[in-house]
Length: 154
Image 1 (cartoon, rainbow, N blue to C red):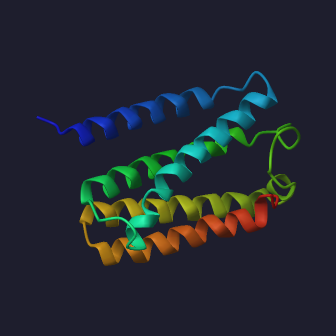
Image 2: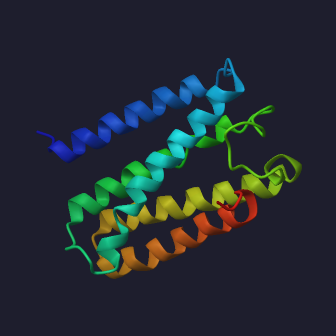
């Protein structure tokens, strides 16, 4: 019998696959694409952020919780890129024009973040808190690098 956390991860993965498949179809409006990518990034950031207090020693380490949050963050890291389509450079967005003018660099930064997020999920599944701490830092750096180059300062 599967545990609740395994079931929850399965639900998130199924949701991610369904949403990803839907995202392959063109968005009806640019605003929909912007909302889609912002929502995926928000959920990813929320679950990644839940690991932060653990690696800082502010919350007790719970292997299952960290693994669950890392798995959700990893899955969500794969979704937002379909929402960066033509016409979504304007509107309610913090996306810099460099996303479209230097698309290869943006794609590379997105892939790097996804790779680091996958490594974090692997470390979390392994249960070694020191490995999780190290990989959390590397993943955070990948996120920051993309934000520095491709996200407007608030």
